[in-house]
Amino acid sequence: MTAYEQALAEFAPVLGLETHVELGTASKMFCGCATTFGAEPNTQVCPVCLGLPGALPVVNEKAVESTIRIGLALHCTIATWCRFARKNYFYPDMPKNFQTSQYDEPLCVDGHLDVEVDGEVVRVEIERVHLEEDTGKTLHVGGATGRITGASHSLVDYNRAGIPLVEIVTRPVAGTGVRAAAVAKAYVTELRDLLRGLDVSDVRMEQGSMRCDVNTSLHRAGEPWGTRTETKNVNSLRSVERAVRSEVERQAEVLRRGERVVQETRHFSEATGATSPGRVKDDAADYRYFPEPDLVPVAPDPAWVAALRAALPAPPSVRRKQLVAQLGLSDLDAQAMVNAGVLDVVLATVEAGAPAAEARNWWLGALAQRANETGVEPAELPVTPAQVARVVALVAEGTLNAGLARQVLDGVLAGEGEPDDVVAARGLAVVSDTGALGEAVDAALAAHPDVADKVRGGKVQAVGALVGAVMRATRGQADAATVRALLLERLGVEG
Amino acid sequence: MSQITRDEVAHLARLARLALADDELDGLAQQLDVILDAVAAIGQVTDAADVPPTTHAVPVENVTRPDVVTPSLPRDVVLAGAPEAEQDRFRVPRILDEEA
Image (cartoon, rainbow over all chains, first blue to last red; front, top):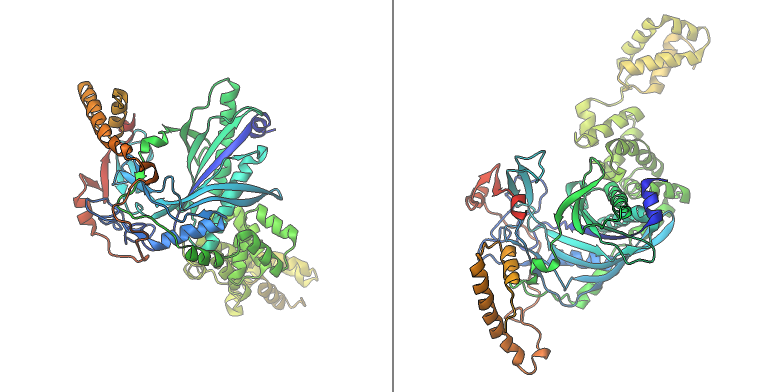
């Protein structure tokens, strides 16, 4: 029994998940500045998002629409009237000294998301979905490796400040027992897939466009719920699971010693998989929320909301079933892909033109292996389903063989561009031109006269060693069948 | 009737990052009391319970803009407003010190 299983045999967990999602709008929440990721620092800012005196924010209608669509997809009730609120705090990531958010009047309330864990459906209730703005990015200087602790000063880039941000908050999730970590991960995965299906965000956890805060507490059966901690900015699906495990183990230790869990914000370290204490949490009242006087109330027209509801895409669970059926995949196959977290990317790869079997083999094989090596989920690898489909097509048309295809995908993963760019830059196309192969074939025959004699003597299968030599000499770029035929022809042996 | 305690003023001052001396805390507690008493007069309006709090002077809803990108400020103009700049970013004092 692991320390985690031991902890959950002794204590019952209660989880809460707060997920922040940057909407994929072209412009910011309250001004027309662009939202392009990775732009030069402070080039996408204006008087409104810098909070300069006299600047007047105006709500981005697309952001409101996207938030309502998210709420509808999560079975929420949509507010008929609500306001933005100021959340006051002093921290240099917001130049205004407040964040425009929503407080007691969120756009969407009371929804749910069903997730599947070990073949069982777990309903995660959604308390609220509200709209706010993202904060700037701080860079801490003078301390150890960019840590805020010990830094001499910090540098702020406000490009991200003011990008529409949706916060999705669950109700406490209790009764999951030992599946707590798996439920947390399944919830975030399902939410990501749902948001991707709605096309409201690019949901790139590694780029921070989707971030998760995980609340965890433990209590003994029959006793009231324990004090919770909030683990901030858990930035990959795998980390969601690891953060829950680590915090469950830590809190169980604390409680066993007869001590109390301190209510605090904790930071998750990707490197160690453990959490460490952050600042002690301010009471909500300390933010001195009040209705934002510069923005008028939002009152979504019920007819508009009904139209948005009618136009929602099928939820991921339904879409998956449809596609699995269309492709003739077996339930077992589909389940294997769900477990590996690749079903959606496999289906997307098929939609991009690849045969189902090829798509499945790549994502469950070479790509799953690469993901494992780098400690991320396959779907989080920096390769798109369209790029995988293109590699599959290059193999089908004979430009690449299986080995070269792997090299091309490694090139894509290394950021060398599209598959065709990698083929061109690395010179990876299959050499099937018999003239060009002739030299390598002659060299192999000259280097291994004993093998050549065996083949001439009737041991045709020995030709494999010669094929291998030619493949090595051509760095895998030859077509093995062509090489074999060429060798046998030179040796005067019938294949 | 004193409604605001000295401790509450000290707490508010900390949240607002104001350094107040002890004698200032007492004086401000009294002044805030006067302000609260003045505002409390609204509570004497007989049917105030039926009137929702006013947060906007003009009864307007749904003022929005289309999701269209408009030009941002040139960076040199942006950073000219910063107390200090470094690496094209706003340079701010150490953060954690202040919170401790």
